[in-house]
Structure formats: C-alpha cells, structure tokens
Amino acid sequence: MNFITFILNYPNALAGICLVVIIGLYFRNNPMKHGDWFMLRRFINWFPLGMTYAFLYMGRYNLNVSKNALGSLMSKEDLGLIFAAGTVTYAVSFLVNGPLVDKIGGKRGIIIAALGASAANVLLGVLTWLLVMGKLKVNMIVAFSFLYSVNMYFQSYGAVSIIKVKAYWFHVRERGVFGAIFGALISIGTYFAFDWGQAIVDMTKANATGGWLHNLLKAIFASETKPVDATWAVFFIPAAILIVWVLIDLWLIKDTPEEADFPHFDTHDASSGLMHIKLTTLDLLKKVFASPLMLLIAAIGLTSGVFRNGITQWYFVFAAEVKQPGAEFIGQNWGLLLMIFGIVGSFAGGMASDWWFQSRRGPPAAFWCGIVFLMTIVMGATLSSSPLIFGYVSLIIFMASVGITSLMAGTAATDFGGRKATATCSGIVDGCTYVGSGIQSFSLGYLTTWNWHYWPFFLMPFALIGLFLAWKIWHELPAATRKYIAEVELKSAQKQGLTAPGIPLD
Image (cartoon, rainbow, N blue to C red; front, side, top):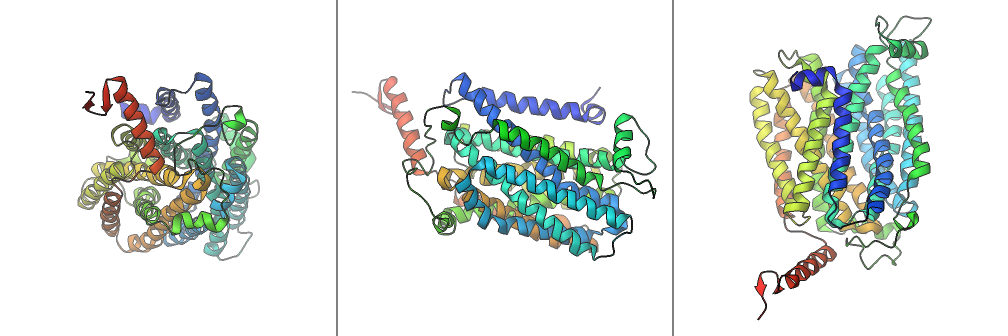
C-alpha cells in the first residue's frame, strides 16, 4: 500500500499518528533539562488547551465547508464578504481581548473562547436550518456576516490564551519548538474543519446511506418534514465538542508552573526581572504600537495571513468549481493534507529557529517567505496546465505560511512582549494576520469570480514584502535572552578551559 492509498483509506489513523509524533517531539526536546514530572505536567497542561484550540478551528472553517454544500445559496462573493467580516472582527477584537487575557489569564480566556464560539456555532446552525427550510426571509450575507463575526470575536480569545499560558511554561530557548506545536495544532484544527466537516456534510445529505454514525446523525439532524441536506449539522457538532473540552480545561489547566506547585520559572523573555511591575491597558498597547520591532513582526504576520488563508480558503472552492483531473484526492482530502504540510512547516521553522539561529525568529521566517514567492510563480504557471503540480504547490505555500504564523504570532510576539504582555502582543500580531486574511478574502472573492488566474499573482507581492520585513529582524533577540545565551556559553567555555567561547586560558 503506497502513501497516497494510506491517506485515502485511513485518514483518521494518519491524523492520530501525526499527533503521536508531535507529542514524541515535545518530550524529546528538553534543552533546559526539566525534570520528568515538570515535562509531564506541562504536557497535561498544553494538550487539552491545544485540542480546544484545534476544535475552535473546526468551528471557524466550517463556514468554508458549508459554502460548497449550500451551493447557489452562497456564492464566492458572498463567502468572501462573510469571511472578511469575521476576520476583520477577529483582528479588531485583540485591542480589547489581548489586554483582558493578560489580566485574567489564559485558562479563563480559553474557556470564554470555547463557550462563546460554541454558542455562536449553534446560532449559525439555526440560521442555516431556517434558510434551507425556507422559514426565514432575510439578507443571507448580512445574517451570516453578523453571526460569523460574533463567532470570530470569541474565537479571538483562543490564540492569545494558549500563548499566554505557554509564556509561563516555556523558556525562550524552547519556544521555537512550542511555536511548532502551536502551528501543528492549527493544522490539526484545519483537518477537523475540512475533512471531518465534509464528512458531516456527506453523512447528512438527504439521499446518503451508510453505517451507524450516518444513521445517528440523520436521526438527530435530518428534517422529518422536508427531505433536504442537513448542512446545519456542520455547525452544531463542533459546538458540542467544544463544550466537552471546556469541562476538561476547567479540570486540568494551570496558568503558571507555580499554580501547579513548581518553583518560580524565569523564561528569560522581555519580562525577565520586571514581573513585579503592574501594566495598565494603555501600557500593554504601547508594548506593540510604540515598538518599531513589534510593528515589523505584526506586518510579517499580515503578509502570512494573506497567503495562508489565500490558499486555505480558496483551493477548496477552486477544486470544487474547476475540475482537477489527476489531483482529485487533494480536494477530497484537503484538510488532512493541510494538517500534514502545516505540521512539517511549523516544526521545520521552529526547530531551525531554536537549533540553528539561537532562537532568532527572523531567519526561518525569511526562508519561508522566499519559498512562498517561488511557489506563487510556479502556481501561476501551472494553474491551467498541471492540476497535480498546482495542488502540491498550493500545499507548500500553506506549509510555509503556517511556519511563519507560528514563528511570529506564536513565538516572536511572546519573546519581545514578555510574559506580562504576551496576550496583547501576540494578539495584535495574530490580529494583523487576520487583517491580511480579510484583505485576501474580500479581494479574491471578486478577482476569482472574474478569472482564477488573478489568484497567484495577488499573493506574489505579499511574499516579497514578508521576505524584506523578515530580513529586517534577522538579528533581533530580547536583551534577557542574549544575556542568558552569553552566560550559558561562558559557563560552557570555562568547563572546556576557555575564558570565553573560543578563547583559551593563559
């Protein structure tokens, strides 16, 4: 059995293997020589937090899955406007939610995210049911845009909450790999959204037949009065799953190592030595908007948002609209392939940052932007001529974009914002990522209606801008991190009979 056949036959098994690999890499990466109990307790902390975040993604991109299922009820322009409304709401929300999570902590933040997104998905499901059943006559774009914006407001608590907790549990020298875990969780959530979401849509079609799960879903969601596809199930099921993870989070998550009965842990980020200082909301916002470096990081995040969601959002629609002979399995397994490529991209960038560049985030981000630029050229050349190459190139762009997102929003913002301002800084960087997503959603919704060939050429300049900005931050590290690295190198040199790295003793 070859790899492609394995993907087609056992997608959930492969997803499970990927998750096991991620957990294994976490336990193998211990540069700070933590004790076994600390490593295990930290895993018990981040795993439910991360899975909650992954299922938030399922309750975010299910909109894209519903678009194909709803057919003429939702056009590409409609999807572009609805998604743009949600992403802009997501981005602006960080001005409030970032400072708030810095004050209330990541545990409360993730619970707010999951409860709010669950409620919003229930409302989206009800709206879909009313529209499909012909029981409500409203402007579909306005109604979906409003409820999707409510969903994205609560979704915005998710990323900042997971990163807020991470900031206290992971040293700067470990954060590249945790950023990789963060990117992997994004990718797993994308798999849940597209492949599990599509499976839900398929099993709830009016004319579908299948096994016990199919029968259960039809019994719960199918209409008894009108034989129509129960597309609304794609909103209700993530809502229910999120409630389960809320209960687990309440039980297991601790905001800091001290709350789990460990001694104080200095992560040597920008808050090192300043943890006693109280920051107002204005102080927290100044951490970003008065810092040229943080603005550069946010701008890189914006460019990655353009080509990350420029691929995630539109290839699924493109493959449904334009037949892709020889590459059908890519569209059919879009979520699973995004998961695989996203995990590779996030771990490649995170490990390179920690292992080869002293936890500098600029060099691997620049590399990934360069890859995106090259791939958009290939994408433009193969859009009409080679569906298989075009599909793989699209996946490589997604791979690079997840690597950049995990490095910028998941890691660099935390390093330079410090534990005290992690949620604010990472939130605004992530918000800028979704500003980029909103730009591409609004633009490509119209451009691709005219001609799909505009698609790769729209992405191309953003890759060049990202490359230039990443080069500008190539050498940047927090001062506390530089001091820590210098001390470690000096101790290592002294053990080897040197006064300083590379300088022999007299």
